[in-house]
Image 1 (cartoon, rainbow, N blue to C red):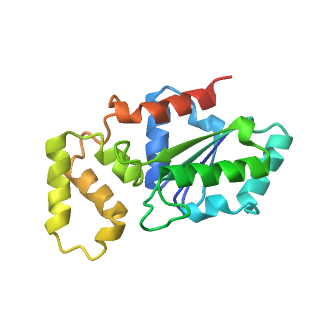
Image 2: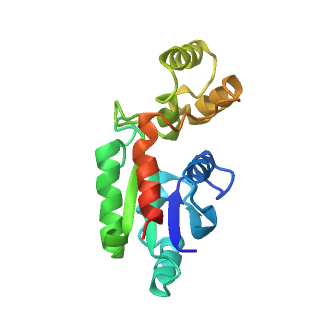
Image 3: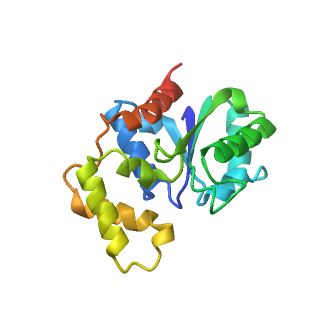
Length: 190
């Protein structure tokens, strides 16, 4: 293993974040076997400098098992979290941690969000890549539904999208995926 990818989610193979990353790696003809995935569960865990996962990363860097790292986390919303919410706050806080760990020079960051608003999460990015008519349909369905947790609609959006469009899960040719594709390509470049 040569590279580390830190992402949100509980599992390094089952989370929505990990699945998308693996699909993009495959789409780019890169080798996922060269990656050590670190599922960080929630976003707040990225900001815990004493994390055991960071200790493991530092050891693997020291022993030259890992040469570069990519941190992929959601922007979320400023209205829900004034310190960590929103693109700029998220970028500032993760940069602070990477500098404190002494790995900023070998690390890169990708903040998942709707590129137009700079808020949201992975599902917001995915929703931003589908045609307007389909996106509006999903948004209208969500607005008029009786789902109890509309404020935390990540899982709901993900399930609606997978059910409604099972044969075209992601349009990786869409420009909104370009930055993440570039960051993954750069991670694998020597």
